[in-house]
Image 1 (cartoon, rainbow, N blue to C red):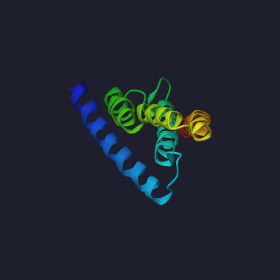
Image 2 (cartoon, rainbow, N blue to C red):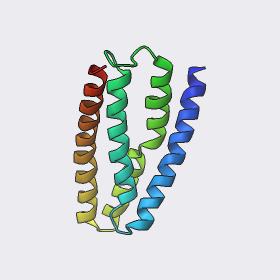
Image 3 (tube, helix red, strand yellow):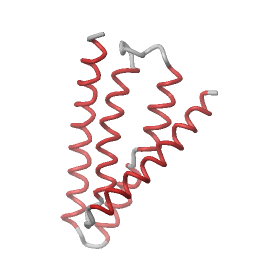
Length: 129
């Protein structure tokens, strides 16, 4: 049953990634893959929130099935570091070194910041109840 919930979460996360990435890419056309950057940042924030809520000591830590569905399934399907890697590689191959470097820096730095922020916010929510 766990695999089924992970698969459903992954399918939903993949659809959400495709939608969000395309919306951003069409609104902000650029050599930088802004759709992927936004998905990685929002996915990193979400996984920070979920880690705080569903991890050890979190408000919902006893709900392992929901954690698998959300963290492994949905977030695993939603975040796009494989797409990030391919797009960075393509930018480098095209000689767009500044864009490739910007993509790496923005994705890594802002995703780490979003993960921390999500974790801190959700931890304070979880502790207050």
